[in-house]
Length: 129
Image 1 (cartoon, rainbow, N blue to C red):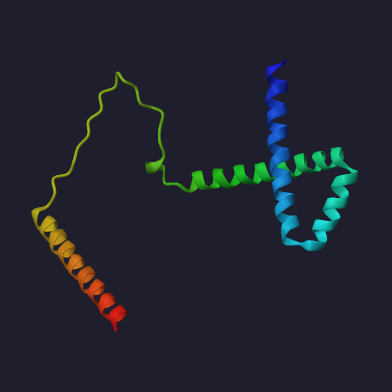
Image 2 (cartoon, rainbow, N blue to C red; image 1 turned 90 degrees about the horizontal axis):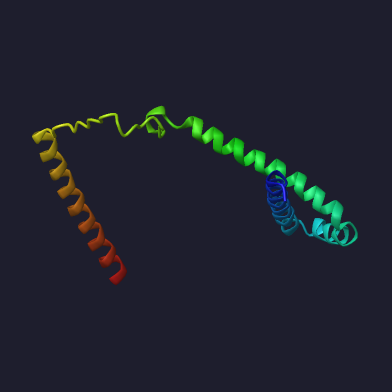
């Protein structure tokens, strides 16, 4: 079997599945369409498979475009790069934390813990009333 034809067969099966799923969802949402689709399915199985493959191709393309748009919207700094080379030395610098900032963070964390505790106490007192 030719590898290209096998890939095409898998892709066609995938598209048929996508199209069938899409049609199924549309059918479940509309009772009139459900009756029409069931009678059509009984009479035209091979044509329906072609329609599902076409619909699956459209759905696949829409999904790819959606993922591509999401990928393009990511900031360049968060995108992984494939330029790493084991022979290239990598230096990582970690910033020294500001002692005052650390103290403020600890104070804010303690305040949040206190607020959570008070909120939980209020919820418990309201549920007991």
